[in-house]
Image (cartoon, rainbow, N blue to C red; front, side, top):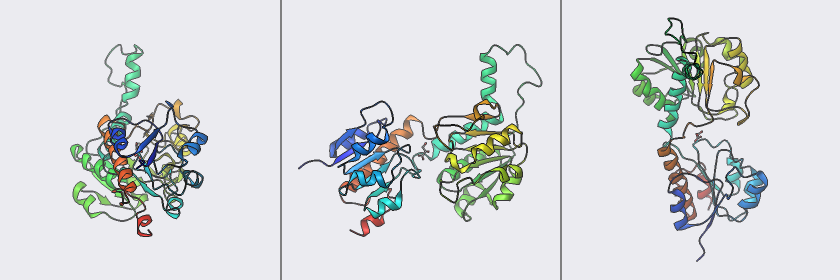
Length: 327
Ligand code: DGY
């Protein structure tokens, strides 16, 4: 019997593809780059499953191009705002993601950014490399204390909770806001549930951990920057459009806040005008989950979802399990 056909839209690290090949006939993106829209539309055609990336826009056109036999799009990411879930559900196509395995890596990166901004690590590195370090100085590259300060966490899901638990090491007071209070989060972190405006006004550090949805688009914009402390540091490792990036550039220019650390951008990989000219922002290229261990686990997880869906079972990380109930 022929093996089911699966498209992998970009080479991924680790042994996941080897595992996939045991069960499926795998077509790999042959280019050492993202596929163009046209290439994606052509290559999904006739596939039973697709392993896709957060950079692939999976809309109705792509779902239709895949065809009626297609069973699953397995996203190599925990966020799945790149996929039209209701369009997939209507067509009986399952969608899966990779929750849990990247919590530590993403929370760690949020901490790395928080430290980098507060202690001006990137500026310091540049300063030394440029040969400008000629003597110790009492006023050189002064940053801000972290220990004992107030940490505001927006979103108390898996990554927000992981990030919050790590704050214990720094003796921080935690405030959090979410759609509803989360008792487990409070027990694990000692965090206090507050409304958005209280969090913005009282936090020294604010870290964003919400998925992108119509409700969270531009969750932080000009109004919110006006409420923050002038010493506040804002970190975003979730999705770029949660922050109005032009308003952020303005806030950083006008020193409405101390600084920002960004892993994600509103129109990735484009950056808002003026962002790269600012010294009070640290920017990295969407590498929240980019550790070898994590990316290997994400690959295995995505592949396991594909294999199960192609065997007619509900994949373990299915976003729209109702697809299977209608069968
Ligand atoms: C995800 O998985 O959604 C992350 O953004 C990847 O870094």
